Image (cartoon, rainbow, N blue to C red; front, side, top):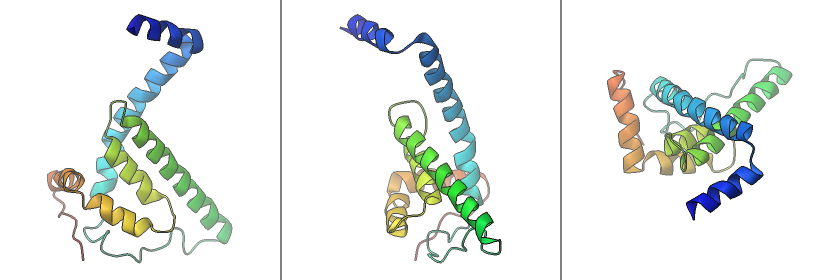
Length: 141
């Protein structure tokens, strides 16, 4: 059964693509191991309590602000998709998805953030990162 699956996969996907998938998986895994803790540590402890975040590039020209928002949302989508992939590949899938959601702007974002961050497993993992860095845990209002 597995041999047939491998033969089927080899018929549709070239070896170069397999190497690309494996390389992407390794890079994404290592990248999230570095990026996720770094970003979560830099957030203030009341980040999820304060729903009035300062807008990105608020004091810049509208074109710069638009490009900045576009870049932030694209980065969020990349993190979100990588997190979904990491549910099946090695990596921190849930934390990567949460990071992606933090970057993307959409209606109802604050409620979704609150629900995800207050999940006991996620909150415990995030606050463990923060404790190791000497940062206080997240607070909620």
